Image (cartoon, rainbow, N blue to C red; front, side):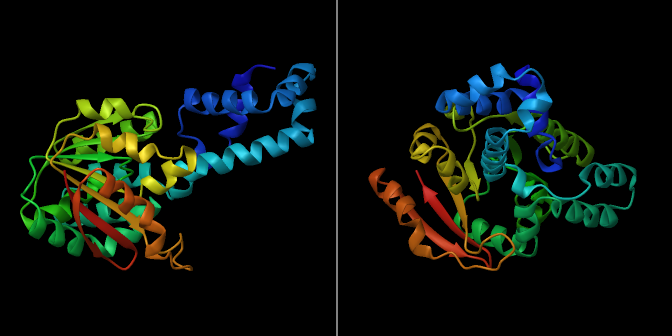
Length: 282
């Protein structure tokens, strides 16, 4: 059985379908390296059906999907392609902006942030000089909040990165459709972190990103910060669990403040209902 068949099975959940095959294959290969007996079971199976009926396959599938949802799938919601098609056809500017708001609701993080964008960019515009270029790492759909930035006199160019090629192609189409100046780039920050230093801008956004990356690779945040070259960094962390049912204690961010102290960085914070923001001077 080819590993490509397993990649398709792992991605058969709708929330994972836009992940790059190569990325999922690398996760599979790492799993097999850690569990060689499962690879032997796979090699001994005569058909894919035989292997997929086994207990080890079901355990493997559960583990991999949970891991992938941690960094990607848990945030995906709704019919974004249909909404983009409506936006492209809409000539009324106010109606178009309303549809962009609906598009932001197709990603969990921007949906939770939608009511707070005005105060977020108000706080940032009072603390930072207006940027010409914003670098948004692990961006999701956040760059489409451009219309809320403009209310505070910010109209930057975006350099946006995330883990899925399909998502970055979609976001680039959004940029082009909405005349938002920007370019997208596919990066897996757990291994492509050195490429960050090639991105030049005025501020780097890391919104609700570091927790999920740390679950995949401990201390990856240090490597990411080592490669950021912008004079300012804005990082956020959730203060509530997904769905808002559970409060996350600020004390759980002591590891991050320890990182900032070790790097001799100065910072200040502000809160919205669902997020804690760090505004950092490098």
